[in-house]
Image (cartoon, one colour):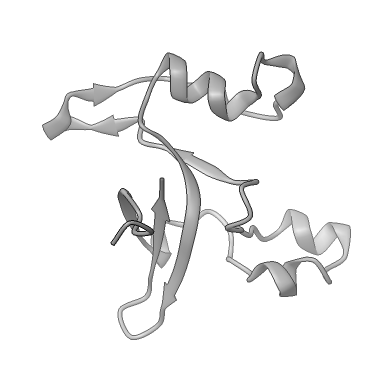
Length: 107
């Protein structure tokens, strides 16, 4: 269990703003197609932040939009993790079709 995710987020497909594409599919898309979809990888490029969770008392606002990671000492992920907490590097992405949803794991 040492390689298990420490946090798992379950997201219903209907809550997604754009369709998901697996990284190997997304990388072959045109630039316009990429703008209409999104991907997540487990290579350390992507992370998620828990910003609202009432039963844990979490209600924070983090910077949004295009961010240059190099503008932050140690990178944007480390900045968010240190300043706000509840930031997790994506380590698993599971897509389910029977009950359409995503489960994203992080550490």
